[in-house]
Length: 206
Image (cartoon, rainbow, N blue to C red; front, top):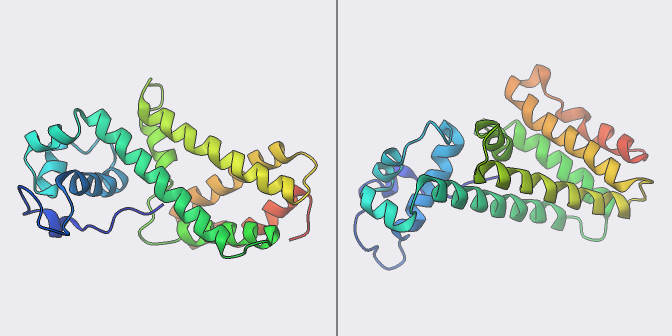
């Protein structure tokens, strides 16, 4: 759920081959696109903007990504990698304790959604931008949610849910809900009730 820590101001003036230890042009372009697509919108952000902020020519951008669609695909794949790395980190904080793992994961989603830097789930955002279109952006967004449901079903199965698949879909609804209502401020934020509602879906006391 995070993006690269390469700041736009640090890469704006770099051109040509990177010095040893510095990010390549491709890495800079991807880092800038990750941030810009998330904060400003995929369709609203042009390749000219990405190239300028990354400190590369438009020709260089197209040498690394043959089209904007290819860049979108790379960004969503990287977001997906970062998201599940974050997920695995949350799960790894409570090894061999599935109940604590689920509660920790849910609490992490609640905390994430109330962060000032949070601009919504990047996969929901992408699916919304490409709604009604046959586009790789919508396909990759859907694949992320399918994997989330699979992982949640595995957790529900371990926790003894009578219908793990159904419980997993309900948990996804709750998670997506908290990722949405976090945009409305504390009065409408569901964060505090997320874990209770989630365990109720599984049929367990929180």
